[in-house]
Amino acid sequence: MRKINVETIKNDNILKNKNVTKEQIEEAINQVITQIDINLAYFKQDFPTPATKDNIYMVMDNTEWTNGFYTGMLWLAYDYTKNDKYKKIAELQVNNFYNRIQKQIEVEHHDLGFLYTPSCVAAYKEVGSEIGKEAALLAADKLITRYQAVGKFIQAWGPLNEESYYRFIIDCMLNIPLLYWATEQTGKNIYKLIADNHFNTSLENVIREDASTYHTFYMNPKTGEAVKGATRQGYSDSSSWARGQAWGIYGVALNYRHTKKAECIEYYHALTNYFINRLPKDDVCYWDLIFKDGDKQYKDSSAAAIAICGILEMQKYLPETYKDKKLHQNAANRMMLSLIENYMNKDFKKGSCLLKHGVYSWHSGKGCDEGNIWGDYFYFEALMRYYKDLKIYW
Image (cartoon, rainbow, N blue to C red; front, top):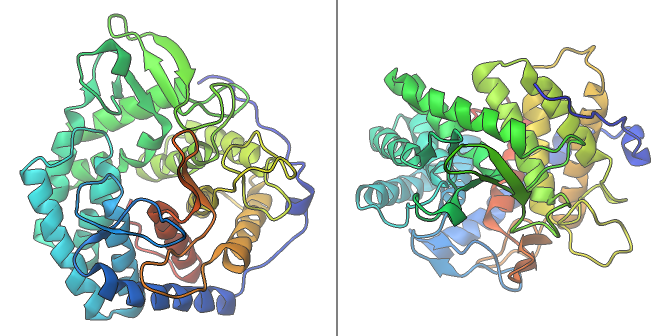
């Protein structure tokens, strides 16, 4: 294991304790349900676009990497209410996902975990859906075809035999839980082996020694050696894209959940402290952690929601005596309350997002200061984690 710097938490806000009450969580979840109910009639069996325009999603078919998050929200709504109206639409969408993987529609990338875990694995965990299970296993089979044995990683996108695409991105830490689940279901160790290898390669390369993260990392296709870290999402190759740092926090926590590898704890500690120390006054990060209050940059509410989920997941495994455990909980509490009070969209109408002020891609100008569907999903998941001992889809 490399030596990764664990910063001392020096964010003054995080040193000031805040608690989240059951009443605050229930009120927020009920607001989420209100918007989901409105959107049921709007989307019908279809899906929202990845990001909003003027905080309203357009309607699309099942061809994006983000579609699984909407189905995941329906499963969370079903888990909370036990109302069959969410189950009915979610199951229709699961059939759609089964058709998509069978016909290989827009699946030549690594985002099979984002697509099939909150939709089809969730369907199997919530209602024992056999078609959900089969679809998710087919997705796991597809995902491992992107594994590059030279370098031991899952290639993010692009042709598998082109050097310019020989790289992985930090987001994939949330795709590999699909592989751990596949091993649990089939007894075939190949899925877990590839997930372990990809995770270890990520720890060694995509996380810098100061505990900040690269968005993407290039490998040498002939030798498997590390080439360079870069970004297609963050402000610069040397900065730390906030959502990427949050993927790291949650990804390491989930890997610990599946493997109980001791080295995960130190990496998690380092990633989380780095993130917490760069939270601004309202406790919700800017889209890149290089930015501070006064820099006139966009926030990314989705990164905060993802980080909360990661912190709450890891809290379950750390002993009470673990350094910074209480401060991590307080950071999650403060971010959660800020999302509820300052970022939750309370203008309920057809196609509205749950969370405002997210960023899809600053460089391309897509979804800047808008809602995005993964932000909505992880916000709902974070609320449900506060509400109950949640059945984790990942």
